[in-house]
Amino acid sequence: MRRLEIAVLFVLGIVGGAVGSAWYYHQAPIATDKAAVEAIVDARIARAPKPALDTDGVRSIVTQMLAAADEKAKQNSVATVASLDPKTLDPMIETYLMNNPTVLTRMSDALDKQNKADEAAKNKAAIAQNSAAIYDANDVVLGNPKGDVTLVEMFDYNCTYCRGALPDLATLLSTDKNLKVELKQFPILSQGSVEAAKVAVQVARSGKDYWAFHQALYSSRGEVDAGTALDEAKTLGLDPDKLKAGMDGDDVAGVIQKSYDLAKALNVTGTPTYIIGDEIIPGAVPLDQLQAAIANMRTCGSALGCPPKG
Image (cartoon, rainbow, N blue to C red):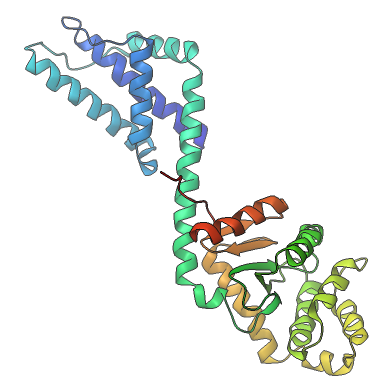
């Protein structure tokens, strides 16, 4: 069921419960003016857990509200009725929603907020469970190896967005002298990407200037493949024939497989993907977003943000 449909059902259930309760107890009416109904809606939105927003959940919410109203009526010795006529109730609900369209906006905002919170908690747990694989000693390290904050990037040499984000990475490395950057080969876009990654793994092990190699591949034209990577490795003084022979080694394949396994564990499906502290950041986000996450890590140990002071 799509989110908007869920929202509509949920709101109908809320409003139906509120208006229906007032209809039940016409002998002792419950206040259902605009402010009162909006308060009921907001209260239910705030309390309702996300998994409950399906058909059964809506029915449960309505049942709970009517049960509460029944109890109130019994305490006041007011008679109740067993059912409502949909022909009477439905127009009341429709009128309310037409007169108060912001209900759906508030509902959507609440769902978005809950979804983001749930996703953040899920990512935080996954990062903790896979910490050893994320911070692998065999990864390429740029910047300060002893930096106080580590930024991990999973990338593909044929990723247009990774190419576009390269200047931001260069800015971080040049302006933040206490930042450690780890690069993970994550070739998912083409066979050429896999071939280039196999060469890159060997270049990283050679002790040559990997940052120069990295920039050169992203500055090249056309698809990046084994030929592109071997040509750039040659400029660093490496033997292309030896690198080509080593591309099919189990140790090289193992490095790439580790990235695939990690991506599966973290539900990473695209490049670039950044990991910093307790946050997974998908896509080529603006530089200031990465800088903010780094600053948050230094301030309170959480890339997601620091609690307000006081």
